[in-house]
Length: 150
Length: 311
Image 1 (cartoon, each protein chain N blue to C red):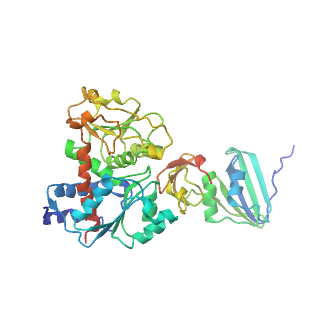
Image 2 (cartoon, rainbow over the protein chains, first blue to last red; image 1 turned 120 degrees about the horizontal axis):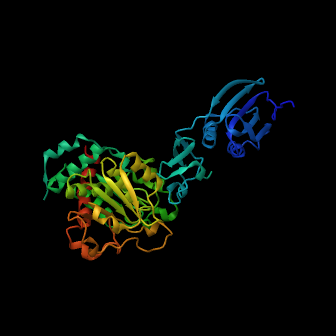
Image 3 (cartoon, rainbow over the protein chains, first blue to last red; image 1 turned 90 degrees about the horizontal axis):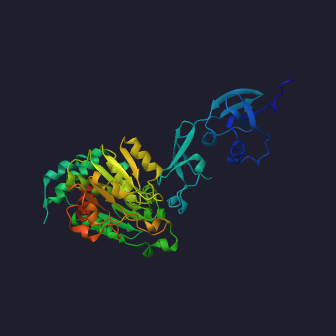
């Protein structure tokens, strides 16, 4: 039986690979590109040698900003970004967890000032093994990434 | 009348000028000890240089007795002036003005802002919009750094060395900002901690992490009375009903009869106000430290203001 690619190659754009299985749709939502005209291909629960299962996203004619890469790292710290030009991977890099993130999440602490004043949230980020933790710089509340709400 | 003593000038080797005090993570151990040394000098009657012409803005969006009056007394005794408010009802917060807009204006009217607010993180947010030093006088369930300072100052005054002490923190560990600040003050010292609370009021995860990172040995307990004979200091707090939707029962009721088998040197602390968690009969025993604790707030705050506003 011939092995076949589940997803076709793109000419120019970005492939986000090694996304934690089940997080692909979350990352698509995060990037907020569904309203754009780019062709997007997404694979969910693809078999992976390194991760057992992974998600994957291919986006035609879109290149990620540093801020977007940082946001992806929060949901999938092991993800890799492939920059594609003329069907070739011209640049490949692992996402890096930022040390801080502003404005993305609400603070889970109902007593926190950011939930009642016009202030952008801000969190210091740390990681322990594969678990990501966020500490509100205002109230000090510590949460795992899974506890955070966009 | 307090004498002005030039030897107080040596305490200003450590400058806190133009700095905010939002959390006790903002102060190193040596800075805290400099504040205590100056507070002790002031308590002995040796006043630091005058803060004549300086203005303290006392901004209390939440009720206070001790903290507000202590800060205002401290500033007046240092020769400075005070303006401000004791409740949010008299401010433009009632018209919907944001806290940060208020702070931007207040910062231009005073040399230091002392802020108490019902929301956690309010002091940090305020400090982000003004270069005028902000002193956190209590922000929600987050911190109360000057309380932490006076608590530690009093512990050292009563028991000498803090290192090696067995200290129980009991009551509402979840919402008590004084507990959080005290832990951050104590993190510099090798002590043994007992975290005593009902199951619904545990110490938050980030504070447990702070204790671990400091290398302090600690244990959890629900029964206060099983550890009373082991400890040197009992720090009790009331249930912070204003911050939670929990039921209003008092976690622990300490009675004089419970002190029969404690160490003779045991000291009982409480940040006040207390409800019924400490029986009145304990007030006249050698164990009660809470009123001395409250009185020391004046000297610690005088020292802090002097170091922040000097020059």
